[in-house]
Image 1 (cartoon, one colour):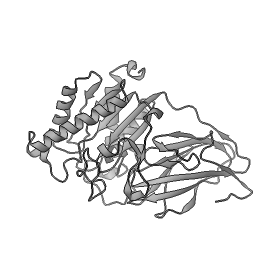
Image 2 (cartoon, rainbow, N blue to C red; image 1 turned 135 degrees about the horizontal axis):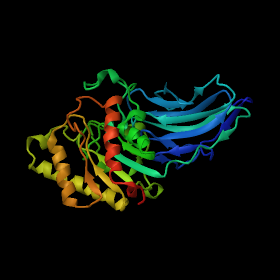
Image 3 (cartoon, rainbow, N blue to C red; image 1 turned 90 degrees about the vertical axis):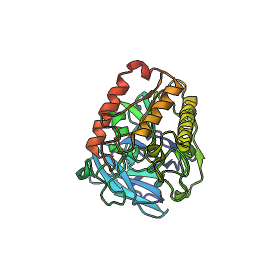
Image 4 (cartoon, one colour; image 1 turned 180 degrees about the horizontal axis):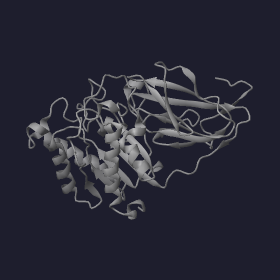
Length: 357
């Protein structure tokens, strides 16, 4: 799309745009946003801002998250792959404005950024550097903030929805990062379990996080080929592994018999998954957890057993005050805030040295 004579076009590769998250930058002028809470930020002058993008939909209705001068809104994205221009802000005063564009949802869709448009003569200013503290999370829909805005359903099953309540800004993961003044890579996917052929992601051919954790793009439904992640690009101080809640589908073998063969296989694979993460991040504090979403306590018992077997002083098991018993539905904003408070306090209990590794 071409801008008119009254507009200023800014390429996605412009160094006055600041990005955060695990992003596919194979083409710097067409970066692909996959994971929740992935974002781009800048400051601009003028009265308006627009974005050009392509949305690659897998499922649900898809929304783009936007902040302009601290005011949040969401924009519905098209269901097809055509290039579209969306208005982010208009009729602003002529002063300096803060713009944040972020991915509200998981890989139920991906977004290819094609550029930004501002008033002719607008001045862009690169934001302050990202925080030095770095967190990474491997999780499921709870870690992605799915259905987090359905605040009338605290402690209740989910309402009927098509994606409109999902907002990664209100995931406990993002809230924890903001409380700790840390940047975040939120490697979270709704419905995902540890193992292939379990969980809910990519039914009926379920894909587990064992097969996705080291990739940027991985969802066959959005049309992209699998793209590996270069772990040299981001080294977190703290890693949170929040897997073990969708693993009870299609059968909850862990609840039925803790010592059954399937349970033993799960624990062996979980141990290897944690060791793989340790191999990438030798100095990180690795926190093993689930969440307050209702699930059988044997999953947490298994995690604790693996943690003790690994016997690494910087691999620890964490339980929330109402772990596994808080809600039958997804975590709403107030519940996420409580979780973030508990998790932040736990991380802070290790002292400032945790951020020095």
